[in-house]
Length: 313
Image 1: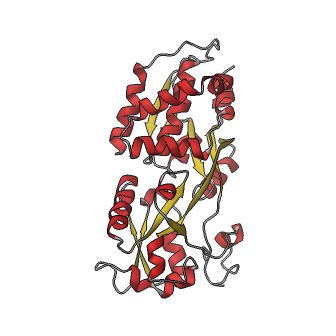
Image 2 (image 1 turned 60 degrees about the vertical axis):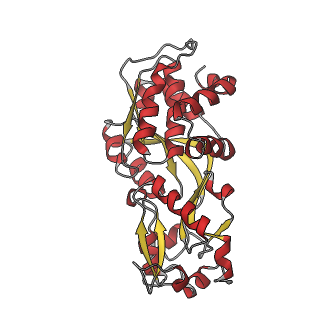
Image 3 (image 1 turned 45 degrees about the vertical axis):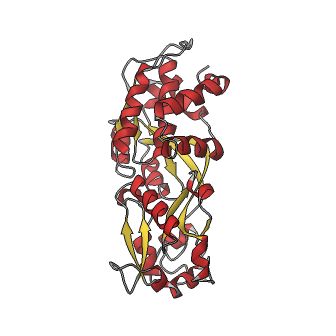
């Protein structure tokens, strides 16, 4: 899936738009990072194609979600369009504290990433969505590879999220099994849902899955920054991460030199905004309908030309 999406991004170079009036400050390429989930590639491709329309040269560079901050600090990478409050806040704060990376503001999307289960699992575990009930029903979520422990299907390990730490801190009878890719995660959900098989897994929004499948997010103890950083805070006085994941904005960040070298591009990136509903619809077109990323982005740009042109004026 990731290779197909990246190939689709490259194919966008064949599209043409009426050039914007802005004059690029440098012809050096602006390097925008792409990751391994559809929405991030769509977001990045929209921004990249808008910058191209303004006359900038753009390179799409595949990078690890958390490890990319090393490249952003040195200027080997320039812009990351999706840093989720839910999983990337610590890495973002550490990077911006160095002064080498800057926060360019919110994308307009609000992030939720948490454990999720299909509604049919409430028949065998009626205390859901409370996490204590989930733990009491751990055997109902077990598989041959994890029995007698329940199986939690996490996202790819590169996504972070502290699921292993949470299981240990809350004393949960679950084993974390990581999906290899974003596509594999949702393929397994589809298979389980069709068979009404037991499953609890990482789900996120903005995405099409919470709309397509009936279910609920697990309710863990409420997140706080102290819960993540101070073991004495929370229900387990000896461990951090004994709470749910944070929720909040999806951010844009950049190497500090972007504003100096390409100030017009930096202004456009700061102006970028899209909402959850529009992004969810675009992700669905790619993942469910099989529409290439370049076509989805082109359709969005055609329908929202006044919006994106305002970013580059």
